[in-house]
Image (cartoon, rainbow, N blue to C red; front, side, top):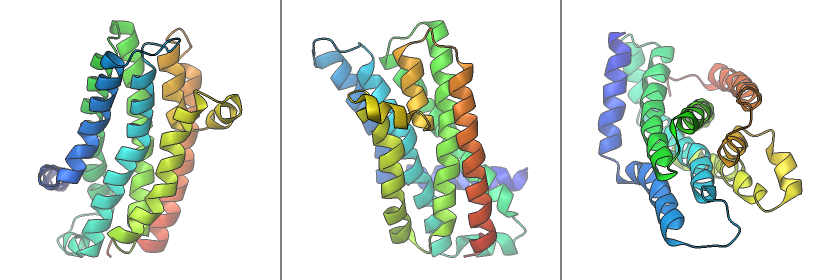
Length: 229
C-alpha cells in the first residue's frame, strides 16, 4: 500500500509539472462550456457538445496522457530503479492508473456541471464516464508499456485515440458510423447523455466487454515487454 501511495504521489507531482498534461484535462471542458453556452445552433440537443467533448476526452485525452506518463518512465529507466527498490509492477500500475482515473473523474464532474444535469442524470453520467475512463487507462497503459520511448507511444496513440475519441462524435451525424461506434466504450457516453431514459445496464455491459478485451491486450503487452524498460 505504501508503494502504491508513493507512485500515486509521484504521478501527481509529475502531472502538475507538465503543462501539456494539464491542458488535456482543461481544454475539453472549456470547449464544451463555450460551445454549449455561446453557440446557438438550431435542432441541436442542448448537451450535444458536452457529450462530444466528454467522449473525446475519455478517449483521446486520457489515453495520450497515460501512455505518455508510462513511456516516459520507461524511457528514463525510472521503472528499473523502482523494481530494484521492491516496487511491484502491479503496484506501479495501480498507483499510476488510480491517479489518472481520479483526475479524469474530476474532469467528468466538471462536464456534468456544464451540462446542467439533474441528480439522477449526473449519477448516470458519472457512472458511465468513470467506467469508460477505466477502459482508457487500460488502453493508455498498454500502449505505454509496449513503447520504447515517448515518440513511439505518441505514434501508437494517435490512431487509437482518433478511433475511440472522434468516431462517437462523427456518429452523431452518420447512421452507418453510429452502428459501428456502438461497440466502442466512448460511444456509450453518447448513448446515455443523449437519452438519460435509456437503461444503464446495456452501455455498462458494452464497456465491460471493452475492458475485458483491453485487459487481455494489456496482459499480452506486459508479458512481452514488462515494466523494467
